[in-house]
Length: 288
Length: 106
Image (tube, rainbow over all chains, first blue to last red; front, side, top):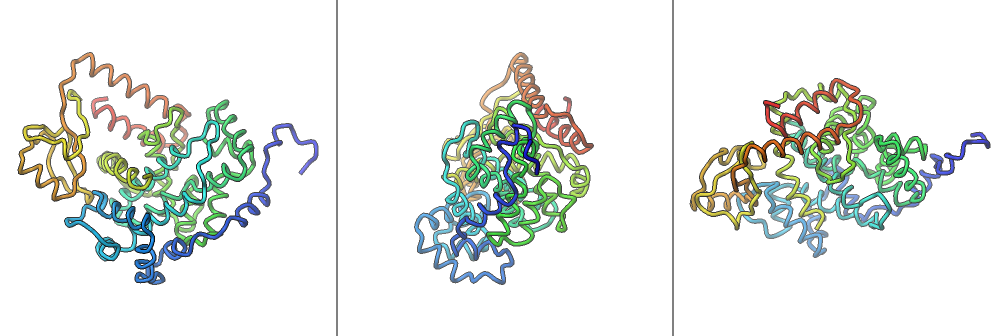
């Protein structure tokens, strides 16, 4: 670290500074922690059912979600217990996770950054990752959660290093580059490292953490497939223009990841259609 | 690409409306094919399948309107894909999304 660093380094954030902020974040509420332990055998469904039932807002959202066409159930779900029985603990998990995490990052305005657009993007990626997972016959609910959380590091940076992130926004506007490039150039840390650190701090399941860590460079991950799915889903939803941001830009896609999924063009067209249809509905429920 | 379609809520559906796209359930099964003419019976069935909204034909486009829409979609795609395409997968994604937005003939 030299003292005569160029003036641009005014917005540099040291890795340790970032980690200190993340370590200071309070733990997730117990119920969210329980649900984030993805291995379902660890989850005491009865306890969760009871806890969610006691929280009116969570219950209402969970029921709306369970009854949306996302799950396409034939009969109407009216209790949390039914929801858990019919669609598993996953609908509950999605709602509790989305709720808990949004609660940690209050939406204060920041010039050039829209929290709503960021959540729209995350939900779109979650829906698309889930659709891809179904086509690939892998676990759809992990894919949804990983998609929902893949950019969580950006919320850490923007909430705790706001002035620095405003410089990132300005840099990106000026250079018209990917966010990751702008973050690395201005702050020296990026939303991928921040996301991975937060996932560790909050004890997310390893699979989810690897996917967050690998959503830009999936080849580097030990658990490759979920990272590859989130990586491709992220690029797809940028390309489908779902976050509704004029200056949105499609990030580069790893050919190894794309080929690893092994889907042909017909399959992708189907994935695009399904993603667009489900997206509006899910975002209505989760952003409400 | 010659019809204007709108995503209509279930409550706004009426018999004789025409589907502008295939309608799938969340498992990807086709419930009704593109071009289907709705009947009251079909609308009731959609309700039972918990369908929330349906893509419906609301008018025909003139050739000028078709051209204008294509130009708009082209311009938006060019904007979204404005960074240099670096990998083979970048090209594949762009081609798929183009075909999705503009139809195969594009």
